[in-house]
Length: 331
Figure 1 (cartoon, rainbow, N blue to C red):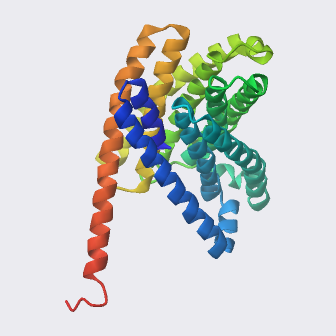
Figure 2 (tube, rainbow, N blue to C red):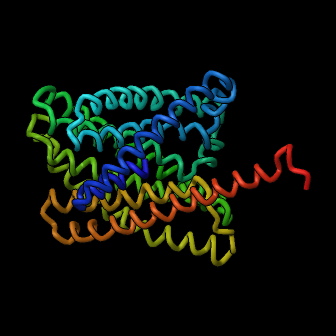
Figure 3 (tube, helix red, strand yellow):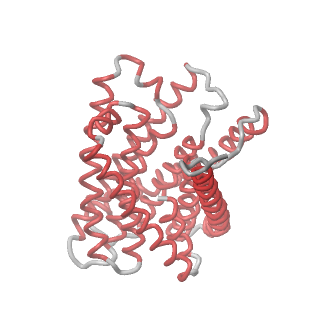
């Protein structure tokens, strides 16, 4: 997700060679992750079923939907429409299945307010998944002369569901934060996904506004424009709050700042915010937003490079530790 959206941002910046390199890195990582999850489903089927009943883990399955559609969007921009269309089918079907399955499963296993008290930033991946379907559908409409009405309807449908999902998840997360005072350890990077969800809602709205006119686009154009601007404003407002939470966590309470996979939950929202802001600025002819998005994309690239470097360093240290503690070591 993070690598794919940064690749899209670099393409917008005119850095096609670097963008293409990140595209194929994202594609390779996507295939590896799919293969590992297929193996896990086959070997550890019970554990995977258990994950579906845990609110903290179940929503993580929505990252498959988002990752599939972000990769498909980047491929669509390079003219790989057939592959992108296949990914839209896969991502769209997965979104529909998980969108009904996960909420019902969580409610059946957690009664009353127990589910609400478990809501955290990861729950916003439900929104990201819905909006990723809208983004890819909109991207595909511009590259095909067929199914324009259907793609437009799918894009508006998924965008609308995503907007309502944001309201639901936002209420649940806010309720959890008010009822259960978070500790420094609780305010982890996944809360940035709340900002990323606003950003991808803006991007989906801006892409819908750029679609060829159809009946559904004409009927919802003003609504999509207004809601997209509101989501951009709210997402922008969230950034200082998230930075303050990070300061409170790592500086005030001295939670160690070391690499963990959760840091990619910051890179994706930063990349998505830059792409969404620039796209919205270009679409509604607001040069200030275009400028903000252009500059912010460099911040996203820096965050990606820093996180990727930290990941490689962490993996290298882990390999060295395993080698040092191997059976042949006599120390």
